[in-house]
Amino acid sequence: MRNLVTSSAVPLSLLTAVKVSDVKEISSGSNQQVINEARKNLPVLQTHLKLAEQTQSQLETSPVLG
Image 1 (spheres, rainbow, N blue to C red):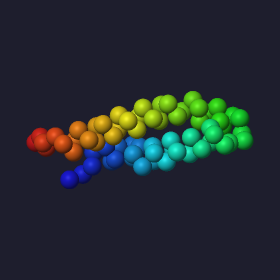
Image 2 (tube, helix red, strand yellow):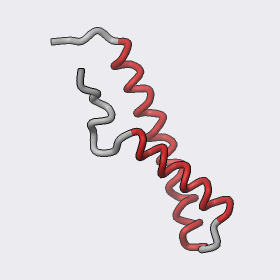
Image 3 (cartoon, rainbow, N blue to C red):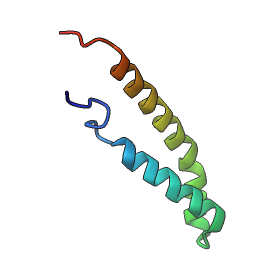
Image 4 (tube, helix red, strand yellow):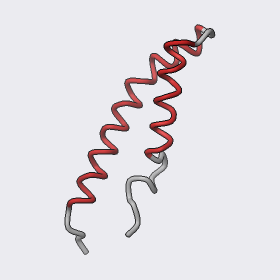
């Protein structure tokens, strides 16, 4: 069965990787502009990841309609 969530525009693995890199940049980065962007983007990425994981979980536990 095709995974509908990870076949979307942004795979979960990419969201997770970006989230981790943003956390590292916020805590140990030296470029203030990049740190500010990471601080701004991290909450949005965390929300998107949470929603994608919830949707994937629901799809995995729901019967297939069709």
